[in-house]
Image 1 (cartoon, helix red, strand yellow):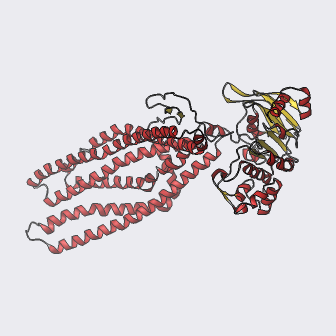
Image 2 (cartoon, rainbow, N blue to C red):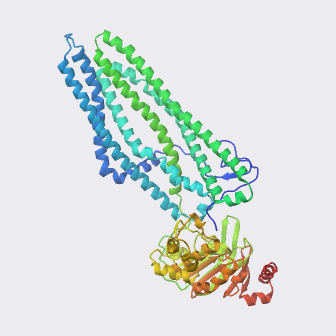
Length: 621
């Protein structure tokens, strides 16, 4: 059962209007995507994000803080020395310039700039190291968690939507961790230092300039909700583009076969345009922040020189201190401006972190029960007792299935599409949990044993077998990672795959393309048989495993199947009924119920549904 994509496409439907839309509509398709995240700014979540820095706090944070303080102190000292140079060296009260003092101050300022430069280099170096380690940890946690999520999670989401969480959303946090957090601390320390200095120089002038800060705060709080929602919309639109790209690439053969390239391009162009408009809107809001802060700063500068000139005339302030004050005010608005931009960056990061933690907080529907025991080595006795299953509430896929399978038996599941064949094998592997009833293996309830110990003893061969990028040898070894080269070649010979492998350009070390596109359908299936045989499971499931193999190849692997199935409990799902006539027991399903059971001869004798399927199939041969 494919869980890669679950995008619902419907003709000529319109998506809901407004920010609460759950889908985007093109000329012909509706995309069901992630619900819009409409949560309030969550400081607890921000703390959770910052907690990823804890493992590195003791190693580097103290050093970074020291470098930060040194850099800030040197930066705040320069304006004071500039004012001193004007009042004491360039235009002293005596009227004669003091060049000796001017040289000393100049050298001191130069040394301070060098110190500031060196501390800045090392601070950036260490913050980048921490930032990249945090991104590595976050992406690893996200990927590992996704690996553990159950099939129903992927049933509800396009593969591209999952992909964008691990790539784009994590990447968008890099700036926050590599320089954002430290710059936030630097700007806060610098602001506090400047305020103290301004009030110390002249408290009247200091208060007059600082009074503009509440204006800036009001501007930022007014725009923050709109900016945050705009960036959330950008992330959602990008996620939809990724989903469509993933589907288009995987379905390129169908698109070209039906000459739908132009229609597909039109649909992509619409999505691309929606993404561009969303980005333009969010970017425009972002860019509005800077000029508004600059205007506020300009007002503060006007106040500075108007009141400063008055204080100079009254003798409360010197020209040098006014120039130093002006420099400090300039340094004051710089971090204020950066904090405004930092807030925007934080909003973007929060939009991504909400999406990341939404996945991390997703609980697998299939997980080990409290106190679950490891399943011991099994013989393969399987019982299904009154098994009921619903993919969706109220729509039963299985309706009271009862099966008693003895170890070593081969069980064939037969029936029309949607009869419940694949559902049964999905339940055996605990890809889903039953709604009601019991499934036991050697008397062990499969819900009370660990998932890993259960699946380690079950092998599955699917119709659309997945071939990973890498060598043929690596793809076979995926069945058991510690297998030797000799064991790999042995199982390949057993399933009659050895001959075609050695005729490949690199033999077993031939690099296969993504999804094994350089191999034929039959060759990919033979590799999947070799992979399953190498794993040596006690229970083997063949889900339409021979459907894509031509008749000549099928005849070749019949003997291999006998080796593969020997002494194993096996479940075989097949529409090609010639492949199951030698099964020990055949179960005929219809709309989630067992309607016939027996071996091939018994079912042919009663001339029921199975007999009809055989007759219909041979009629078209």
